[in-house]
Image 1 (cartoon, rainbow, N blue to C red):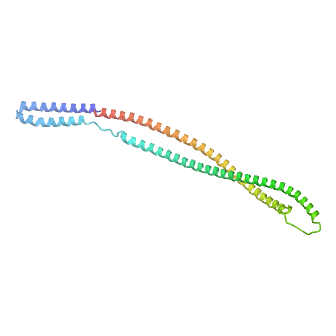
Image 2: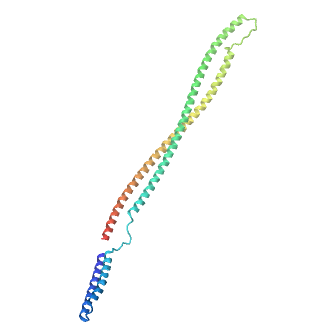
Image 3: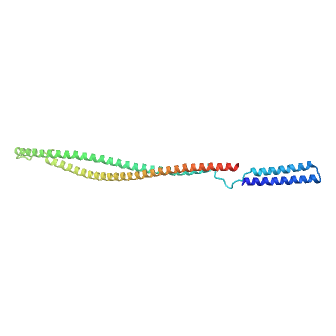
Length: 262
C-alpha cells in the first residue's frame, strides 16, 4: 500500500510538472513575458508540492491497534503469579497451624497417660506393701494366739482362785482390731486402684484415638501439601512457558513494527 501510494504521488507530481512546463513553453512562444517572474513563481509552487509529497510518502500509515506493551503483560502475569503463590502460602500456613494443634493435643494426651501410669504404679507399690504388712500381721497373730493360749494356760494354773486380768497389747483382741483396720484400708485401696485403672484405660483409649486421628489427618495434610506443591510447580512452569511465548510475540511485533517504519 505504501509503495502504491508513493507511485501515485510520483505520477501526480510528474504530470503536474509536465503541464507546468508546457504552459511555460507556450507563454514563451506567444507573449514572451518576464521569464524570471515565471520561474520564481514556479519554483516555490513545485518545491511545496514536492515537500508535501515527500512528507506524505515518508509518513507510514499507523496500524489501528498495536500489541500490548511487554511490561504491561509481564506485570499482569507477575500479579497473577504472586496471587497464586499467596493463596498457596496461606493454605500451607493453615495446614501448619492445624498440624501444631494436633501435636499439642497428642502431647497433652501423652502427658495425661504418663501421669496416670505413674499414679497407678504408686498404688500398686502401696498395695504390695500393705499386703506384705497384712501377711506379716497374720503370721504374728497366729504366733501370738499360740503364745497367748500357752500364757493363759499358765495363768489359769497359777491363779485359779484369783480374778486378776491384764490387757495384753499383743493379745488376740488388739490384733483383731488391727486386722480389721488393715482390711478396711486394703478395701479402700482396692476401690482407689479400680478407679485409677478405669481412668488409665480411658486415657489410653483417648490416646489411641488421638494418635489414630493425628496420623490420619497428618497423612491427609501431607498429601494435600504434595498436591499443592505439584500445582504450584505446574503454575510456575505455565508462567515460564507463557513468558517465553510472550517474548516471541514481542519480538515478532517489534520486527513487524520495524518493517512498517522502514
